[in-house]
Amino acid sequence: IVAAGGIEVLVSLARDGNEGQKENAAVALGNMIGAATGTHEGVVEAGGVAVLSSLAQEAGASDDCKLAAAIALVYLASSCPDLAADDTCLSLLLSRLDQPEEGGWRRDSINALLALATSSSACAEQWHRVGGVAALQ
Image (cartoon, rainbow, N blue to C red; front, side, top):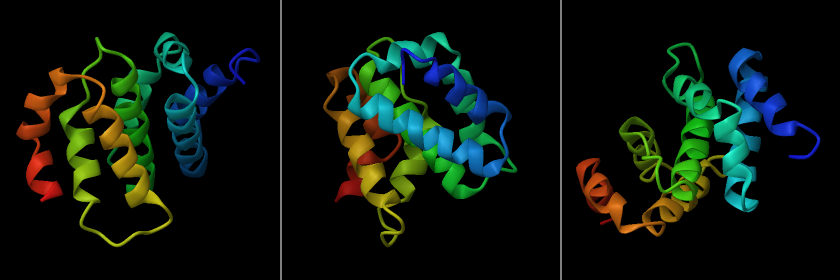
């Protein structure tokens, strides 16, 4: 997928697609970043950080679309030591922890948060700031 230019296509869909395309592209990017070592570099180079950040905060986007973008960004931050996770994205994921499982979103949120929490000690302060410790108690 990477060699065939798939990352650029997914970033483009996340930016310019319809609601379903944006959500599916964000999910695909999150899955790729979480599963394939080195994918994060291509997402950063394709402008994916800005696109996913905008999508996670887009007023007209569905909650699932925002959540998919937030998960992708948190996976991206866990893969890139010089890229901090956005507080808004972390808060969005944390807000899903006390909700019933729906379509795997709660599990995906937990997995993304765990990936970030175990990626470096630098995220500890941010984790406390957004309420991560309290949300897990």
